[in-house]
Amino acid sequence: MTAALRPAVAGDLPAIVAIDQGEDGVGLRPMLYAELLSRATAGTALLLVAEELEGIAGFSACSQVLDEATLLALVVASSRRGRGVGAALLAATLKALAGRGARRCLLEVRASNAGALALYEEAGFREDGRRSGYYPGTGDLDREDAVLMSRELE
Image (cartoon, rainbow, N blue to C red):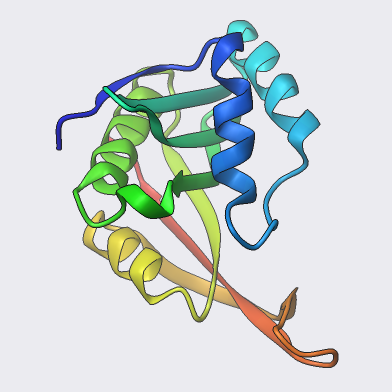
C-alpha cells in the first residue's frame, strides 16, 4: 500500500462523500461528514483518509464517547480496492482511537459483505450479535441482517 494515512481536512470532504456514495448511491448522509470533521477537532470523532497520488483512495469515520468508539464507515474507492488500503486504514484507525483513550471499538456490517467481514475478523473483531432485517435489500421486500462486531483496543 502506498497511500499516506492522515486526518481529514475540510478540502477532503467532497472526495469522502463521493467515495461513500459510490456506484450505488448508498452511504451516510453527506452532512454527517462535515459534522464529524468538526467533532474531530473537539476530540469526539475521528475522520482519517488514505491519500494516493491520484487523490483520496478511502477513509474511515468514527465517533467516540468516553472510552468506547464506533466505526461508522470504512470505505475504499472501488477502483482502489484489493491493494491493502482498507487494512491499513483500519489499523491506523484502531491505533488512533486507542491513543485517544478508547478501550473498545464497535461496528456493524451487512451480513453479505464477505470482504468487510473477513477484514474485521482478521483485525480481531468478533461477532456480538445481529440486527435482523436492519438493512434494505436489493428487492422491494428484501431486508438484510446487520452483523454487530466489537474488539478491545490496546
